[in-house]
Length: 138
Image (cartoon, rainbow, N blue to C red):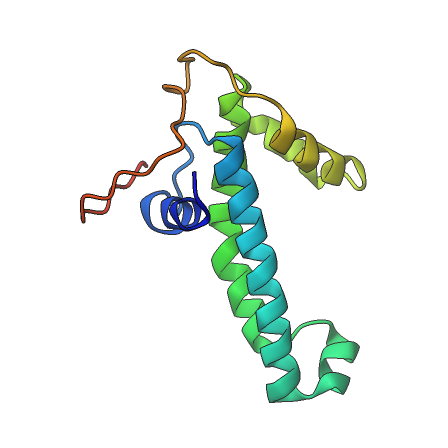
């Protein structure tokens, strides 16, 4: 799945879609996108509010809005990624444990998904159909 396909699939087709499965490429491309958005919004915050404000508070208004907008799709994507290797989305809760949570997110990203349909759906493809229509999986 390409970078733009992954971002489109997560933000448009599956904004809060917790059902189904997500491929490793979709997961990693979207995390790269989220990282880029984070850098861009921090730069915008520095320009708008000054470096002292961002140093003191860590975030400005633009970063907060972007983070809030990306939270649900990021959680949904991770749950779909967990589904890809046949586990319950509730496993996502392990990510709230300090240190272990970061390791878990990395492991979720590198584990190979099951190569057959499982209880969460068919094997995810690495292509996104471009038919001009938006598809949502709720």
